[in-house]
Amino acid sequence: MHGHDIRRDHGGHRMKLSRRSLLATTTAAVAASAAPAHAASGRAPAAGRPLRTGFERLAADGYAPLDGQRVGVVTNPTGITRDARHIVDVMHADDRVDLIAVFGPEHGFRGTAQAGGSEGRYDDPATGLPVYDTYLKSGQPLADVFTASGVDTIVFDIQDVGARFYTYIWTLFDCMEAAGLAGKRFVVLDRPNPVTGRAALGPVLHEEFATFVGRKPIAQAHGMTVAELARLFNGEFLRAPVPLETVLMSGWKRSDFHEASGLPWVPPSPNMPTPQTALVYSGTCLFEGTNLSEGRGTTRPFELLGAEGIDGRWADGANGLGLAGVRFREAYFAPTFSKFQGRTVGGVQLHVHDPEAFDPVRTGIGLLITAKRVWSDFAWRPDHWIDKLTGSARVRTMIDAGADTDEVVAGWHEELAAFRRTRREYLLYR
Figure 1 (cartoon, rainbow, N blue to C red):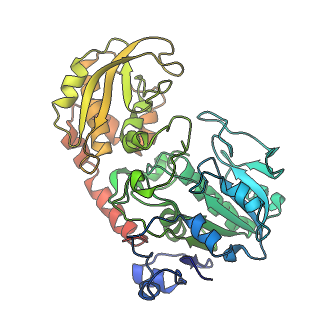
Figure 2 (cartoon, helix red, strand yellow):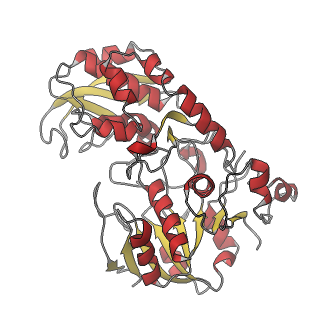
């Protein structure tokens, strides 16, 4: 195969691998425009030229990894080309690909469903392809869907936003596990992490708190691409590794935010309208675990936070924390749906002025602590959803005990350091 960098992880044994042994068990083809040295290093091609996604490199190579295979694609509206065509439409029109099925995640393949919903089983009007629903399916039931579809190879191409509780990475995990059970190949087409891949941040999930917003012990802001996560899942968490291939990007640096990619932004879900939403999401989504509005039903979800009875004292208190890269403005808004629908609430708007210095998870903790101090009606959701989002009961109990931001952040130091060591083995880009 030529024209892209492809990695294969072959199942049949449990992968607990160092970088050296990991690279030794994979094969890499040289990108046509890359120097031969990169094949020896096993790394992605050097940045310094326009970014090309995994799909772009796959298409440029004539879809060689899919040759002779009946193909199904797990995707949503973010699976697009640089000129904003959907990859399913592109592949369906190309005789070199035998595309026979599409698999839709939460919100659906074409993105018509709100949070906690999906589109169900239907035939896509644009292509006539059968669309199968993967949402809330896992294990053998999902494997049965793959078997019934008749595919040989499952391709994954969805834009992630870098947070553990964004469900598409667990769709990836569940589909990998089910593909293994069904005896299918699995190919991941890589896309950028829009909030960079510089570092992992925040608490690590404790497995007794595992749900669909966090299946396995990774950091709250993981700092990885979907291809890197797929290799991590295969090497650390799947009971039986799936035959996995990853088609890498070229021209992406770990320090790049979405704006550097030159790619169109398609909201991965209805409440992720901009890259700026993604930038704050891994911290401010924690307000889903409280009785405050996280800004759903506004044009700035996760950037606007508030509740009835909150005034400017919250913005003053948050600014007083001296959090890096962000300022807080006293704000008032009336959500059109979700919490406080149709009622005017007070709160804050986040304004990130230095994305490189900004720590979304520390910011989210600081905002929780200051909200609890200035608003006497502050409460956690009765179902302790905050514990599922943070991955344990520790953040909630420490805040309730009066801990400050530094103390709460220090509470996850050791587990985060351990995750960072594991994560390092699966990183694919400089």
